[in-house]
Length: 144
Ligand SMILES: [Zn+2]
Ligand SMILES: [Zn+2]
Image 1 (cartoon, rainbow, N blue to C red):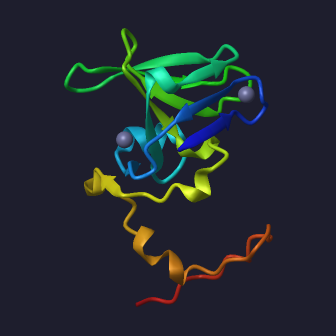
Image 2 (image 1 turned 180 degrees about the vertical axis):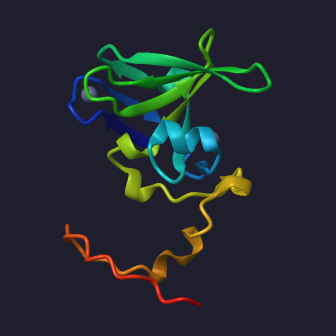
Image 3 (image 1 turned 135 degrees about the vertical axis):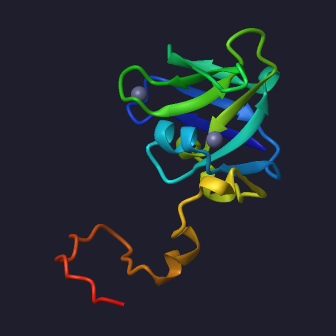
């Protein structure tokens, strides 16, 4: 599947060919911090299909195993874009949030569920609205 992606300010953009059956959610604590979100959604693309425009910056994360991963982001607006091997990359792990076709990319796997937010399975019980809504006033919780 052909995808297009861009950061929020538009100074970095890319195109890639991804396998739409390989969309993954990662609940690891690094992804929570680095994405600024409860979990991260990603899709993998072979490096040969990946075409980048603009000049992103990268932060090299060193895992406990010693494995090094470049976390690539826009230096202007900070949008996380993709991760890759710092040297001789063979693939890019694209952050779904910056992909135009993200609503068509349904996850097929979840990893690091050990550190997943415990409330993710209960989101259908959370009040919502189709567009922005002011936060409701805080009401003290009843003692269980
Ligand atoms: Zn940007
Ligand atoms: Zn992760």
